[in-house]
Image (cartoon, rainbow, N blue to C red; front, top):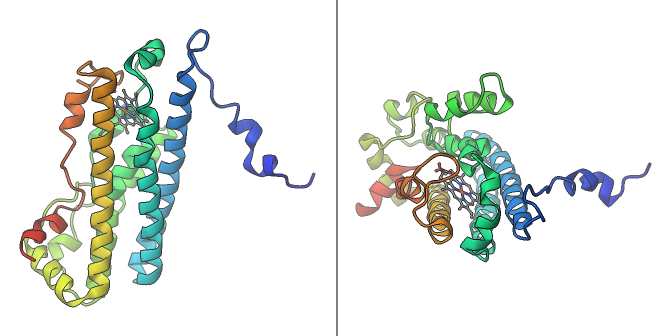
Length: 260
Ligand code: HEM
C-alpha cells in the first residue's frame, strides 16, 4: 500500500480518540478533550526540543541552540494562546460535563511534570501520583536523575571560559534548581562581555517567563470557569494554582537584573 496522508498520520486512530463521556453528549466536551490532547502533543514536542537543546548546549553549538530556542518558544507562545479558545466555554457549559471527569485533572499530566523537571523544578513527591513500574513513573524517575536545561547551560557557560562555581556545576541533580549567589557575578560578566552567552541567557528568560505566563493564564481561566471551587484533582483549585505563580525556573537570571 502506498503511503497516504491518512496512513502516515494514522488519522483513523487519531480521530477515534475523542470520546466524550457525557450523555448527549454535551456539545462542549469535544472541545475540552481536543484542547487537552493538543496540549499533550505540544508537551511531547517541547520535551523533544528540550532534549535536543540540552545536547546542543553541551556541544556548545550556539547557532543551532538559538534556532531550537526559537522553535520551542514559538510552540510555547502558541500553546499559551490556546487558552483563549477554552475561555469561550462558560462556567455552565463546563458544569454540563464536569462531573464526568471524576478525579481526572491536568494535575496528573505526567508530561507536564516532565516538562517542569527538565526546566529544573524537580519534586520527588510528584512521582507518588503514578503507580510504581508504570511508563509515566519510569519517565519521571529518569528525568528526576538527569541534568536539567539549566545544568546544560552551566556546562555551556563553563566551556565558553566562564568561571562557573563548582557548587553550581556539581549540584545534586535530583534537587530543584535554586539561586547560587556565587554564580551571579559570573552571569553578570557574561552579560557584559559575551554577546552569544547573553543571547542564550535572554532566551532562557523568555522560556521562564513563557511558562509563568502559561500558569497565570491557566489560573485566570480556572477562576473564571470554576471560581474558588476545589479541583477535580483534589487540590484547593485556584488557591493551589495561585501559589505556583512567580516561581521562576532560573532564579539567578532574574536576580542579576537589578545589578545590570
Ligand atoms: C476549564 C478548563 C480547566 C479547568 C477548570 C482547570 C482546572 C484546574 C485545577 C483546579 C487545577 C488544580 C489541580 C486540581 O485540583 O485539579 C489544575 C491543574 C492543572 N491543569 Fe488545569 N484546568 C483547565 C484546563 C487545563 C488545560 C487546557 C490544561 C492543559 C494541559 C491544563 C493543565 C493543567 C496542569 C498541567 C495542572 C497542574 C498545574 C500544577 O500543578 O502546577 N488545565 N487545573
